Image 1 (spheres, helix red, strand yellow):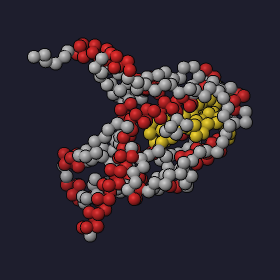
Image 2: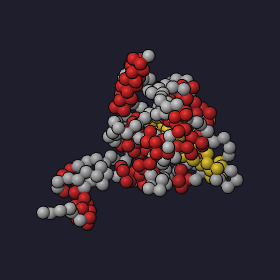
Image 3: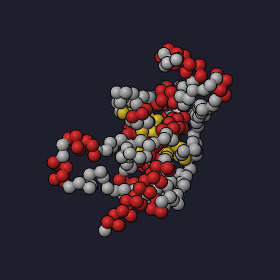
Image 4: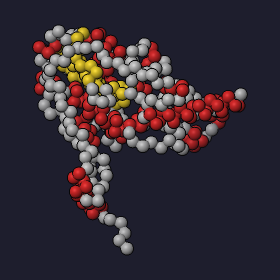
Length: 320
């Protein structure tokens, strides 16, 4: 009887025949060699000035109410900052890039800062004064980005029903949006710096460079940072997390109310006085976590949510 392998043996076997990216263990070293799950690093844009074209919008024809699960469409955003203020410590957005799920550039431009630049941070950004001559004003950049994210709909739809608005993916998105002086609904943000499975055990963020090397297997940010390179990497990370299998039954998963699937909460069936009389243990038993996996963005999850809501509506109609 062999029993369990010792930890050193397990480590040795995985080192010889295991893929550090997808964690699959192969029967032989040759099988591992022929296994290809590592994506090539994206080609950086460098410091080229792309023409500022009209944002590309892909209007969706899906209808959630008819039970057609579309899943969330995602857009990745990355900004490069230069310094303002007397000591150059004030972050000013000087370059922005947006890509879709197929790594196609939807929008790229240099941004004209609203106050004088005192530090171009050239070693990190690669940006010089000449790059910002004739750059797009911040207000126009904001309008272009919102037009892409809202998919041509009104901005109000973002906070009302969500409409056909896109999910916004990025690393440390709050900082990028602050520098762009923009707001976007929290339920449509996917931040790789704050997603628990991508964080340290003490919930401290990893750098995008570390996450890319660990999960995608290539290096980024070698020399001056490139917004397209970062956009593609953060989109790939999001798609990996979104593609994970998610257990749909028995765990009380939920989607945001703004998505208009099911507007009821877990406490709606209880009266206030009933909740007040419950013990902490009873409240904990009926509670649900507000943590939401990105795999719930997939089309399968949307279809499951639609079917669940249809059944709930039919049940409510029958009771009435």
